Length: 121
Image (tube, rainbow, N blue to C red; front, side, top):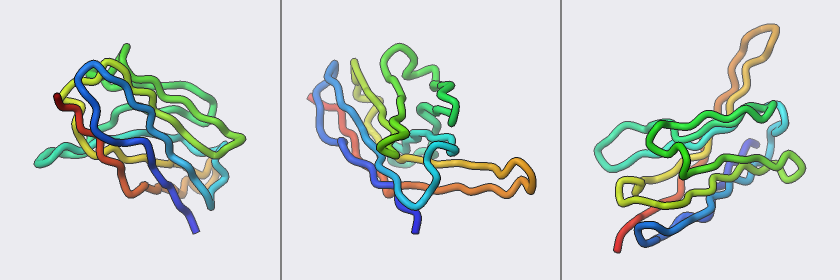
């Protein structure tokens, strides 16, 4: 059974930092591309940051220079370090795991349950 469990969310003041973790089980973590997405109330779920199985990263323009995604294949965990947080970063943050089989192109796609991040004074 595949599980993605996020942790590390909470309430932080503007300018503060948080580190999110997503611990996975039931997948061959090292072959999956991983990502963090967020969804604010009344808005769609948007990509925040992604990291491929090879370690290449991509960020939404709104978080470049402030957030950093990383992965620890030995611990089957992906992280999101969030610095200089702003009120507009307030959202539920979701972890995502993606894999496309190179031969039959079957896609494997999983989500965590989300963790709330609130940036407010």
